[in-house]
View 1: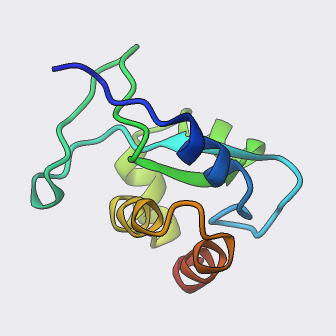
View 2 (view 1 turned 180 degrees about the vertical axis):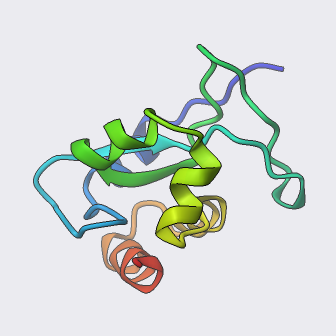
Length: 108
């Protein structure tokens, strides 16, 4: 299955504050790699990125931390459902104000 890319959405995600700490200076688009059947998201393997719709905003520190451990444990430790957040952000992609509200409402 061909990976769907969306450069405009990635740019939008990078313009939002970090989902975990509210930092707005180093935001990166962090892909959620684990699978979630309830949302129709398949598991992606090492070296394979999921579609760009499965991204959330993280500062560079939290993005690096995300890749140092089991991803589900990382998100569970922060009490955040990144699949839900990614879906919500993709739905309002391009609307900065709505994106900031979603990020703030899901921040631990």
